[in-house]
Each structure stands twice: as structure tokens, then as C-alpha cells.
Image (tube, rainbow, N blue to C red):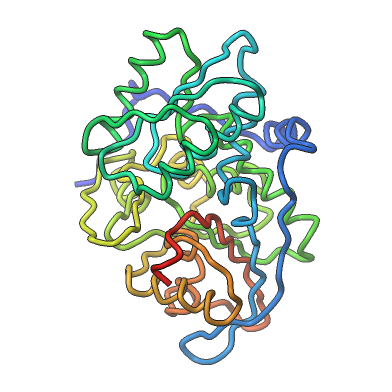
Length: 319
């Protein structure tokens, strides 16, 4: 039975378009306005016209730099140390942002964190601590460590300033793509789709795409609240097993559709990007394209959807 909304459950903070606009002002000169590439890709019934938002070209190879920088710029300037829990890209993003702003950074990672991403955190000067076997365990450690050290604690995806920073992608798309085509983006913990929702509201149709083995947003919408899901995958596709409260709230209010794609389809989409365009992305970065190529998402005739390629931190030898 679905869990009904409880009156004693606190509403997640709202992130508004005005918050995203404020984030864009803070980020001027600090992030890249990533390009859009109009092309066609192979679909189940022939070529499908798409607009690829090349966000993997962002500093650090991840859209998460936008949210990390916005959060640190909006935080108390007296805090010179920041702590975050991350399985990968958020840790890279916060490490890079902290280095840019002259702050020290500690990233708490679960034991399963990919070496490639840990190495990138080190490269940006972060202290990396391993704790626990899951993101949840690492997150609890990060909260305690921040309190112990008097440091600023950043959440990897469920934090208003982080979501607002990611939303700047939506404002860029308004300038880069005419009309109001749908936007497909990977879900993960939810900061990307939440940011797009906050920026674009109902101006454009936003579609979340998640791996079938971690249906975190689908499960939350079905249950009436974010819930933990079991991740069962032997691949490098490491997605959040619980969607953020902010993303859940925005997806629910906007009645955001969520599509599920198989790991094999995501891997095939990534290989296709390399083979056809010599573009290297990580598996989650190819999830939105996989929805188009597998037929999980079929655009209406004459519609050219926007596909966000959101991250590029992967091992090159896997391609």
C-alpha cells in the first residue's frame, strides 16, 4: 500500500526560479556555459533528431560543479573547511569548488567508490576518508565529522543551493534551444532534474531517466515519500539508492514522468557516443540518451528532445 503524506512530515524546502537566477549571477565566470549539439542518433525505428547538452564538458567533468560552487558561495564565508559525502562526482565537484575558493575539503566515500573518481578528488587537493559500504553510512560520518571540525557540511544532492546551481543548466537551455522541447536527464539523487524543474517549471516537459536496478524516484512517487531501494548491479553504474526530498517534491508537483532503462541499454548508448562522436561519458551520463535509443522514450513527430549528457568521469579502458 502506498505511504500517504503525513502532516508531521516536514515539507522539503522550495527551490524557485528566482533561486536559480541568483545562482547564475553567483556563477558568472566560474562555470562553463556548455554547448548544445543538434544531431540525430540511432533509435529503434531509425534516426531520431536530438539536441545534446554537452554538460560533460563542465569543469571536473560533471554538472555537479555548478551546485557545489553555488552552495559554497552562498554559505557563511567564515567557514574555511567543507565536508561532503560522495560516491564520486559530488566529491570531485566540491573538491574543485573548494580549491577555487581557497577552502580545504574532506570527502567521505564508501568503500565501493571508484578509484578513478577518488583520484580526481585527490587531484583537486581533497582529503579522502573511506567509511562504510554505502552512501548512507558515509553521509552519517560526514555530518558527524563536519560538526566535530566546525566545518561547512554540503549534501551531495539534497540541498537548495546545490539544486539551484544545477538549475542554471535550464536557464542556458532557454537561450540555446528555440521552442519548448522536452528535456531528458538522468535522475541519480535528483539534483539535476530538480534544478531543471525549478528553472523551467512547466515551461518545458522534463523527463527523468533512471537505471532499472535503482528506481529511486519511481519508488518515491509510488510510496508518497523518498524511500530506500536496493541496488543490485555489478556494473560501474553507481546511482543513489534514495532520491532527495527536494527532487521528490518537485517531481511530484510537476507530475514529472520517470522512465526506467536497462544497464545494457545505458552501456550501449555510451559505446554509441564513443563510436559515432568520439565522446566519452560515464554510464550515468549516457542514461538519458539510452531512453531514446532503446525506445523507452519516443518523441512525438516533429519534436527534437534535449538530452543532457551530464558526466564524463570514467575509466577510458572500458570503451
